[in-house]
Structure formats: structure tokens, C-alpha cells
Image 1 (tube, rainbow, N blue to C red):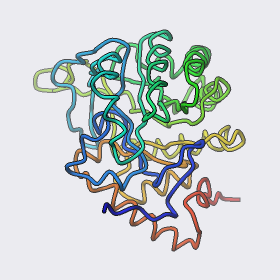
Image 2 (image 1 turned 180 degrees about the vertical axis):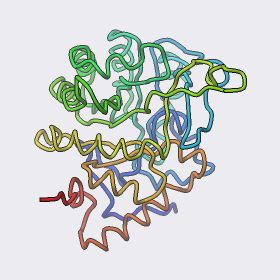
Image 3 (image 1 turned 30 degrees about the horizontal axis):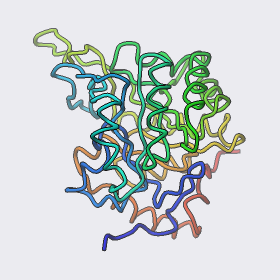
Length: 317
């Protein structure tokens, strides 16, 4: 029988019961169970599917994923079979996945998102969906995630298509300027988000100095990995303190989690759960190790549950 995580690690994510705060990020773990050969999926709380759009997308040309000195550059371009093929070929097998599956939705218009949400709402094996409103590796992919008015319209439209399905919204990593990430988060919450995922990859670019050409076929893309972790911690803290704590809306932290202390930082900053992405490409055993060390962390702080440490950073006087 598959080993189960420490029961003290179980969480309630906006009414969604997960056996661990570990979630595999969209685009890094296939549609549901593709990593089962190299990872015990019973170790994780959930897996987020590859983002699905209304129409099929081939994605960007090679090169569309490359290592960087401090992480990974990617510009996959949301390659996916579209919602029609997803419903026919993939949805029927989701119930066999030994963990919770969260559907990821992307699009280029409000109507696109709403249609995919409508169809995913009919899949019993998808108790929640995550709106990818902040993808930096497609042209125009970050627009909804940085505009509170457009985001309000989008989240409201998706919310109207969902009955019992939870709605998570994956935000852009707005570090400075206006609108602030708190304003964007507030808009998502008021429009009906049950939880917030903070944040997507940071817009980035690489140039081959020998050829003077961009290294990515899309020219720009997203940076993930260890370099973005401190940014993610700050964004989670800012949104938790600025709006999510008072609104009692959980946060899923994401960005550069490669070990248990990275995960613990996000929890102390205000995250109820966290996603692992780039690190899975290097070592798919990371989730199991993080669970084990988080259990020891709970012992160190003499608490009974992960939830007892959410947002419990000790700030200076």
C-alpha cells in the first residue's frame, strides 16, 4: 500500500481537503498521472493539469525551454489539445489518479475561459480549477493578471459557469508599480475566487551573445526556479497581510521551491499550500522529502497542524 503523508500535514484549501500542502504546478506534471512512474502520487496533495484552452495549441517552436544560471527559462506557449479532446481523451481517466486533480484554464478572451470552465465543471474528478490569467510566455498572456477591471470580468464569467467546482486564480508576480498585487488580488476575491495562486513565472529573456539572437523562439518567456523564490515569498506575504488574511481566502504559494525550508518560508509568509514546478525536472523525489521534513518542522515548533504556522512570521517591533 502506498505510504501516506503525516496526517498533520493535511489542509483545508477553501473546502478542498488535501492530504498534504504539496501541489505539482501546472505545466510540469502532465495532465494528471504522467509522473506516476517516477513519483508516488500518494505523497502529494494535488496535481494541477497542463493549462487547457478552448482550441488546440501547438505552442511555440524550439527552443521553448532552457536552463538559466539561476533557474529555468520557458516559453512553451500553452501547448495543449484543446478542451474538446481533453474531455474525450483525458477527463475519463482523471478519477484513477491517486491524488486530487485541479484543472488549469487559459485563454485569450473571457469567452474562451468561460467555455473551458463550463466544460470542466461537468467533470466530477476536477473539484477545482485554476485560472491561468498570468502566463508570460504567450503574447498578451499577462494582460488579465495585471488589470483589476479585466480580471474582475474574467473571474466573474468563470465563476458563473461553475457550480460545485472551486475557483483558484493564478496571479502575475507584480513586484512594483500600479496596480499593486494587493489590488489585483482584491479584485479576484471580490469577483469570486476561492483561493489565490501566487505567483506565475517572472517575465524574462535570454540572448545568445555569439549569434546575437534570443535563445527562446518566442523571444521572451518566463523565469522559474531558485531565483524567483524570494520574490514569491514577498508577494505571498504582501497579499496575505494586505487582503487574504482578513478575507479568509487561502493562498497557494509558488516559486522556486526546491527543499522543505523553501516551502516552510511560503507557509510562514501566509500560504496554506505550495506548488513545486521546475524542481520536478531535476528530482521528482522532492515532494516526499519535503513532506518528511515538514513533519519534523511541526515537531520543532510544537504545533499540531500545518495550519498553525500559516502566516506566523514574527515581524520586528
